[in-house]
Length: 322
Image (cartoon, rainbow, N blue to C red):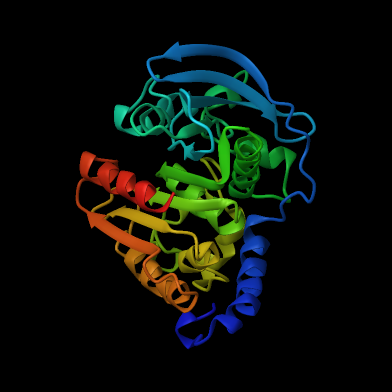
């Protein structure tokens, strides 16, 4: 793996970054070179004090339409937008919209109604409206039966890039000011999206990862009976040698402002303190790119969740950078 501390000049970074991207793509999978026409449709619409909530759908490939909640504040033009990535929950986007689940995760509703951002919350595969028939929620076996080229995390990345397409093409969105936020699985997706899509200008990720190298329970990434995000990592966990780690994805996101919120007593990840190590390593790249304050880390002991203090930090981050 690349050691960032050896880099001294921003001139060196593009070449190193290309190697990091290549290593990540080898595991995540190659994204489709062409994106389909979105053909966005509004399925229903409801007015609330100060904003409108729409349920839309759009194509993410030649056959698959996915649905999303879209929140639009009243009377604003050239408005910043935030993509809200849901956590690992069977109800998917509905939790982000405040329609069930943990009210603290109602991020799409929160950032529109309280702060005036345009927000969007789509479903990931095997959650929400993307569950059909007798499929089990958050189980990836059907995906790998149909596809072996792109990991499920890669598919989620491709789908979220289509969501950025939707926001970028909206007349009322300032396409230069699009942020992303997520917790848990959503936090994972937020980092990966920011790393691969330079249209994302600001990121907040909560409890989204632990470094592969320090993870003593890698089943969350490779379990064929669960939500298997990165099956190609399995031999690397067995050997203890990894082509990339989370500091590399964070560095790929540079210089986009990125806030990492992390619980050091997380019950989901085996070594959450390793997140700080990843952030410190990636901060070196931010510094040599002239954005030293644009990658920050906040640790807490409040469990695998978002709390009012961490939400306030996210609010301040978006107010500062978006």
